[in-house]
Length: 396
Ligand SMILES: Nc1ccn([C@@H]2O[C@H](COP(=O)(O)OP(=O)(O)OP(=O)(O)O)[C@@H](O)[C@H]2O)c(=O)n1
Ligand SMILES: [Mg+2]
Image 1 (cartoon, helix red, strand yellow):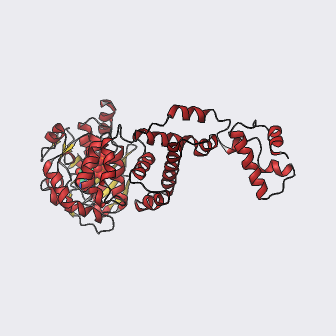
Image 2 (cartoon, rainbow, N blue to C red; image 1 turned 180 degrees about the horizontal axis):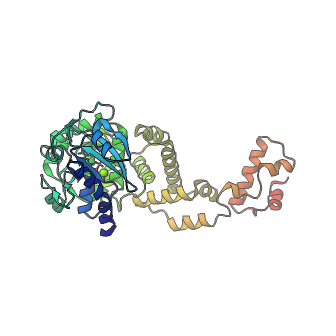
Image 3 (cartoon, rainbow, N blue to C red; image 1 turned 45 degrees about the vertical axis):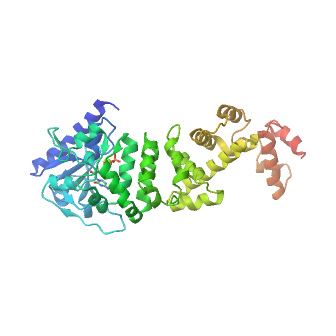
């Protein structure tokens, strides 16, 4: 990330503010993009707050999409980028999606900023590049603290997900939690149970993959937030390993596998756990495979054919998992063994079912067994991967 790129993002976005101002409205950059600009972090989305009502925003720009009119948000496409433009409002539009939104439009930026979650997220910037900072967000950026705007309890009652956001930002930014904010999370952690699992999962994964996850996991556990998460209630002791890892996880599937191992999930309980977190089937399957591979490798009895079946991706993931847990698996030896396998996929076998049929084997369970035998023979180096050698090996 460079300053040039950051400047570019805002330079590109300036005409959007300009157009709103020319149309007679106030408009500011707000929230995460201003925070990330000041922290010199990469900016992924530029949010704009304005005095214009959604209909007025739509009239100001040629191309727009109604992404969240009921929250006051219109997405505007301009100069090849898209911008979320939201009318000044109070009472968050961030409520759990199953609950009706109560959005009240307000007259000015100040009222809007007051209802934002943290001081570092309640900064705005105008077209002149001046920062509007009503709650000493700049000071908190310097002190590197996550502090709720105003009365923390109120902010968490407006949207309990913010408690998860607090620990997520700790991890991503390497910030600490301001004491009153921390106390408010301790007092209100039960509210998290009202929030949809999808939203909690999103924050949980961002926390896990953030650069300071170990510090953030400490507060995730100490404030009681973990007690409100699917499958994690009563597991604080096992999960405390997360605060003491050599490094944080950098891969989502490895992270879920780590959790599954830490809370001692038996193989048949991994799926229900992953589903409780509303993970995709693909993620669920990957995690089951990684944990199975990790268990097998931990026993140290894996054959070459086991390595073949595990496959490169899951092997690397299982080794990462072992690394996080400080397990002494000889990674290089295993990877070398894998790399020396004569074939890496069943498709590379010199014969297939068609070929066996041509050789006079009837489509039958026997055919499947022969294929499997050939595969095992080739993978384990017992037989060369050629049709002639395999035919002799199978005695057909
Ligand atoms: N529960 C929430 C979610 C968002 N916001 C406000 O809306 C802004 C934008 O929200 P979002 O994009 O979800 O978060 P960011 O802070 O931008 O973080 P990220 O980098 O993950 O986008 C936040 O900065 C904050 O001012 C809030 O007050 N409460
Ligand atoms: Mg954002």
